[in-house]
Length: 238
Image (cartoon, rainbow, N blue to C red; front, top):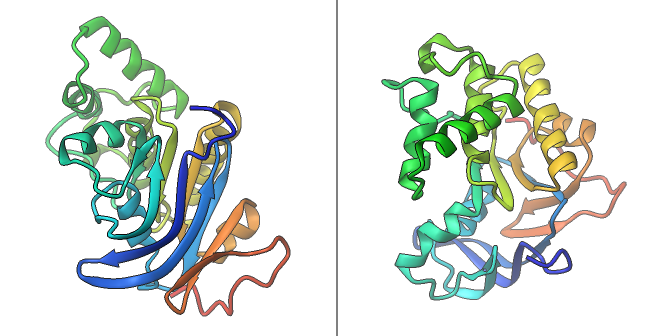
């Protein structure tokens, strides 16, 4: 994708949560190398925007395009191909608890069409090294700390060399010191690989310490905040 073309764009998009509209008229462009925060109080529509980006929530009004795929009327058979261009990191890790780290990552590669065993093993080794978890391949999730599990989840998100990482409250279940390590990791991936990162959070301390573009969800709108603008009346950390 051309660096001048946004990897994510919305124009006048209404964002739904089920049948209910939660955001009206979203305008947003995210480019390669951007680090973007979507912030706001609990229930303000942040996660619904992420679910629209992954085509989990259909886009019915306005325009949306993610990694070259138009979200309007996106065919169900194209959704898996869109999602291969995205790396998604969740608050609750969503690792398969009965499998080792190696098997968790292997499962994703096979599900996305990889066949060459040697290539798969090399890719798993590469992503584990990139998150400093190369010695943990034989462990099961319950044998890892929360921070280690989230690093594995980030490794999983990197497997198919995504154009965008979507991180939905990735530090929500972690203590502050462990959260720092996860943010440092995401910002280094963003800086070194040029991978765009879109991160949902309601923790003001995060986006103040690790600056990026900030979109505020409030009063059924989501708008970009000017640099230096007083972002929120943060009663946000709830």
